[in-house]
Image (cartoon, rainbow, N blue to C red; front, top):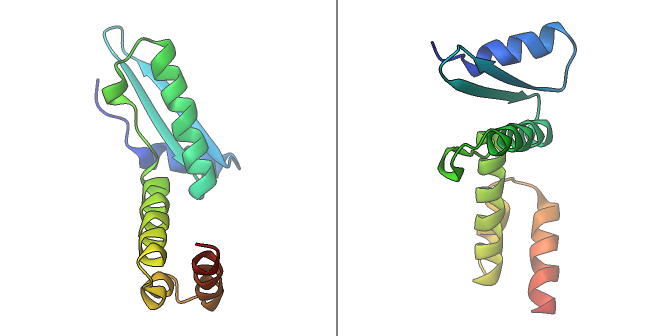
Length: 112
């Protein structure tokens, strides 16, 4: 079986007005799961559904995946928390450029 590119899932979702899609393919020998979501939440939801399918089919957990978009958000959140915990408020704001994050960081520090 040739791998189905995620772009094919994206194109199908867009053509049919879908926010996210999970494709389960089988060629008689092996299974393939491909997911796509139009934004971070839809992408994470599709990946979660794909992982559920994989679990139901008995795939090993090492083949489960998090949405790459969601992975980036999680990493940014971890960096934000790390910077707040280490009193680097300016660094906590720098990844977004949003002053509201500075206020959040200061509020978190005040409660710590």
